[in-house]
Length: 273
Ligand SMILES: Nc1ncnc2c1ncn2[C@@H]1O[C@H](COP(=O)(O)OP(=O)(O)OP(=O)(O)O)[C@@H](O)[C@H]1O
Image 1 (cartoon, rainbow, N blue to C red):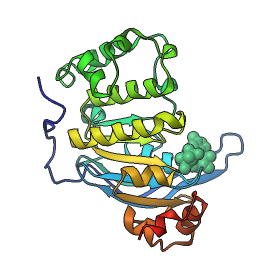
Image 2 (image 1 turned 45 degrees about the horizontal axis):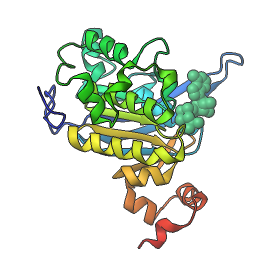
Image 3 (image 1 turned 90 degrees about the vertical axis):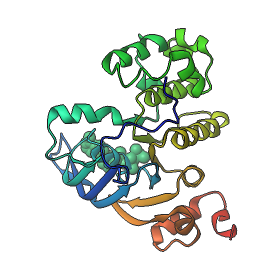
């Protein structure tokens, strides 16, 4: 059995970025009016193996559209996207299918992500059937232990789980695939404040122990600062500022970043220095 801390089987050179986004533009068309809205406007970013990168911005700034397009899971758009060294514009279906498990997404609404008709155990069984070799490294009970859930949870259905437990199950399902990139899209916004910190700590722990990179989508600067080394600030579809969290939060250059920081409870970011 392979431990979660064991290196991933490599499908590209270790030092290659997990994800490179070059000049991405994604537009949405309003179905009723036909109007075109540019949700992502010439965005570039790169995520190294094991890195923790955040995209922050207010609601509607394009964070989710960016993350979904960049990982090949949403509207495509134009631009150059390389996932584990493969260009999404030229990759074949078979290769894309092989690449899919390497990127796992943890969404905001854990109950919405789980099939209400499946127990946790049968949900895991289904995943294992889809990817038998990839998922054979760990047993169900041990997997749940990794996300600090008791084995009894295996026989529960989603409606029998709290929000925090359901999110841990979602994280366990992601972990089972031993991804190279975990995209966490507002993973704690739907949870009680009391469990938010635990879920964030868990994501951090999993990132550190597996070597997966983390792309964190959030409007919450406190979450970002606790979890990520690097941040991209999005405003109206554009990245207006990017850099190490310490630099961006302590000495923001763009007016919008300053406004975001000022809207946070306390100008405590700056007073840390
Ligand atoms: N499928 C879609 N069709 C039309 N417009 C869309 C679609 N998806 C998103 N949009 C619009 O694109 C813009 C960016 O949305 P997106 O969800 O990427 O932003 P966000 O920063 O993730 O916001 P939130 O934090 O509220 O999820 C918004 O104005 C949204 O209304």
